[in-house]
Length: 85
Image (tube, rainbow, N blue to C red; front, side, top):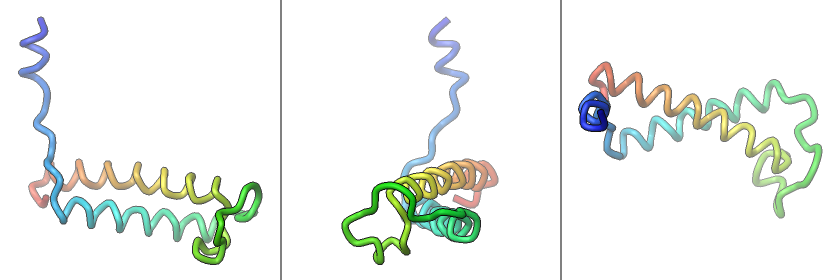
């Protein structure tokens, strides 16, 4: 059964500068969304230099970049299945 499952698995995309750029753009988009929608951006622990992170707390930074990675892997999988990447 295992060879059948391995044969059905899809081929993964190798990393390239295009895939990195898509991920960076998706993270920037998620940070912009967080900047507009998070009501209390500086609640909790702050990074050593908060002005570098736009006044975001560590939790807000982690949440925004996590959302960016979700957007990114969806965009990368979608673009690669369309043949763009």
